[in-house]
Amino acid sequence: MLSKTDGLFRKMRHWGVSCTAGVMMALPVKTMAQVKMSPAKIDALKTELVKEIDSQQKFTQEMVDMVFSFGELGFQEVETSKYLTDILKKNGFTIEQGIAGIPTAWTAKWGSGKPLIAVGSDIDCIPKASQKPGVAYHDPIIEGAPGHGEGHNSGQPLNITAVLALKKIMEREKIPGTIMLWPGVAEEQLGTKAYYVRDGFFKNVDACIFTHVANNLSVSYGDGGNNGMVSVQFNFEGQASHAGAAPWRGKSALDAVELMNIGWNFHREHMETTQRSHYVIKDGGDQPNVVPSKASVWYYFRERTYPKITQMFKDGIRIAEGAAQMTETKMTYEVLGSAWPGHFNQAIAETMYENIKRVGLPKWSEDDQILAKAAQKEMQNPEGGALETNGLATTLSQLSKPSATPNTGGGGSDDIADISWNLPTVVLRYPANIPGLPGHHWANAIAMATPIAHKGVTAGAKVEAMTLLDLLVKPEVLRNAWEYFNNVQTKDVKYKALISDTDKPAIHLNEKIMSEYRPEMKKYYYDPTKYTTYLEQLGIKYPTVREAAGEGK
Ligand SMILES: [Zn+2]
Image 1 (cartoon, rainbow, N blue to C red):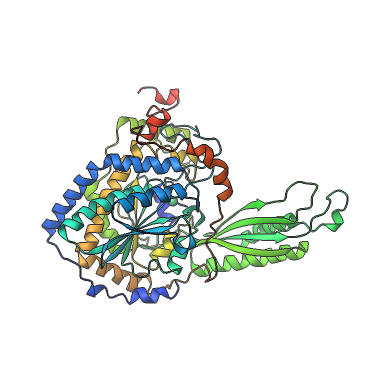
Image 2 (spheres, helix red, strand yellow; image 1 turned 90 degrees about the vertical axis):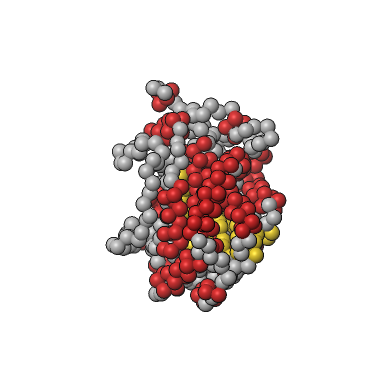
């Protein structure tokens, strides 16, 4: 659900557990048999990690391009998950497939003993966002097909690059610890992370590093000010009849949907400004001469705190019940996803930021900047707001700290928050995309299989590998991380899942769309045995910009 610009991304993160929190808090961090290394030794190993990751740029590029070409929507990440777990299996990781009852979810573990560090990133894409990479205007690979208009094709390639580099050093230096890679399946539906937590997959994890595409190299801690949410589909059932000959015999489920929306939109007038709520009608009937016997509407209810989110959910149910009463229809609802507002760990963020400063931003080429500026020009804000045509980031972000004044803006959501309320977690944002684009849009796919994404992922992998090393060989980092988690973050706020014990992951989502487009999309899967890059396979000259925009090159 995240990230068009770095700042927005930060605002969009946030909070909420069940009984597992108690288990976590009792974790005996002090008893971990962590090795301790001299600063000079750590420094030398970090230099080695950078060298190793630089030498793997071809491998990284192939993974980024390959996942881009799969373009799979949430819960349907079949090819993506197979491809990524095959790589990990070949490299000695033990794979557990289909975790939490989600066919495309998995964990991949390597190493032994404590600490156990989780490394994750999302893998799903955006509907109707198909776009040729390297082309600075709308030019879909397949019209109407899904595509990586968020950049979730880049995070797991980053994680795998980082972890394989680290693994070599862990083996040689006999550094104890276990690394667990895991995917954010259906992040766009906020569909899985609360289930991973509920079903115990993070029970014994000591820390989590999550990676998310952005346009700078950055990390934050504390409450970033974004909303949590619950995603609910309301289904109405009435009675069909001939809409012309016997309309009095019908009870319209579509009427119920419309009345619910009207009710909610009046209710909106009396809600706090931090809320965001939006809906799409998933089923509005078949044809006008049949009174719709079935109709459904899908809502996202977003707010800043757990009590406010659950209140919105209750209000939604009440209004849906009212609509059902007015239309003499039956109403049922199902939870399709959820996310707490995020809160991220200070000790790990500060450690990571030192590594960010060490790595710095990638060196962009003139071609990278031409593409970025042309895409920014193409997508300029029609309201004349902040028009960003400055190209790619060349100044490193500061470490983002929580604001002294409480955020009242609200915003988007990300279910990494559910992990972040169960164990020390940070999100590493890396510069693989172009600033100033709309987000969840084909334009956000332009950079995602080009040198911009490849360089951004390589930079991010270096930061991640170094930070993982810090977590493994500097026991004080984990100690301080749990100190913050137990005594600051969760001192007053305790996680309680927004899903119930009986809710199930909505694994049917996007099945139809993918089965419609997949046969055609298969023809465009990247073949690295024949083509150096995906750009080459698609026959795209890099960068391709509108003639006027290219003037002066
Ligand atoms: Zn995202």
